[in-house]
Length: 478
Image (cartoon, rainbow, N blue to C red):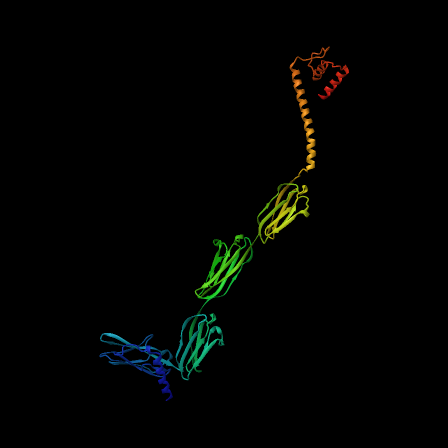
């Protein structure tokens, strides 16, 4: 009696759950039983009756050849299976020709041996992170089976955020707020202690980028290679792009992408590559931006020195030395000759240094050198400083007082020189003069001409001794 009741209940449930298994045109075909349920090893008969004249129905299996024995007559066909196997669970169809056309009707044969009608719903679903998830599993059997849940990547334990409800032959797994790790395969296991079977449901959880990070950056030297890596998890898979917050030279960027990972590479760094690099990880559910600072270290460059040249005593001197470098350069001053650095005033700012002397002295003249250096190199520059001495007022008066008589004496002497030259020229034009009593026929010397001129000069009260003195004097002056 109990078995009959259970069979009746099972038949009714099969009709309710599988109304689509019976197909066809009722006015031409009729199948009984309409929802057959058979234990493994038992016999079963499926009867198909044609309701049209001269109909000749025939049983067929939808996948493989029909098991068992088929007996047909003019209006009906019987499929008898003496011993049902588990593999016989399938859909069977009965085909008949009526009025020149073919019609068919289907019936599903449920085969069970302790378990039957195992179902899971849904078999696949896509949900966003934060949404809820509900999976139902059901099954029948004798005795009534138990239903348990598991997830292969969760091990044997049940996660605490799973909510599982159970009733006879049915169980539901519920998750209130999905996390990315909740995606995967869920297995419903149906067992009554003697037999067991499984059904699977695939869950795909979509979520925006998370666990995103950027690697690389920091300090690097000029001409070295740079590699920046950006990673992030997301479902659907994220797209990763790169940008610079300052000016960009992307033509030298080499970018490679793989699943959830992107690398930006610059083979040889330049100072202008310094700056902030940004990676954007995004999909249709969100985006994340990350930044990395890149500092390019290089030795001093664009170095120059300004100032120097000519300056007067007591004037101020300012020498400026500049240069770019990273790390910031240190600038020092020196003299190639003796130095009086105690009067130097040196001020430094970023990449700039000024040496100042408030009042120049003659000893400040010389070559000044500035050294611009950091750990990657150094540059030396030189500047020549010439100090002109200023004449003091009292010294100027003395010089002027002496210059007047000196100039007068020079002018007077020059006049005497011109007069003598003119006289000599006039004498040379006349007939050569000889002293009285002279018999020499040779040329007259300058001394003789002057002596003759002196003898011919009127006495003017002077004695012969005065004439010799003039001659002597004249000879000495000549």
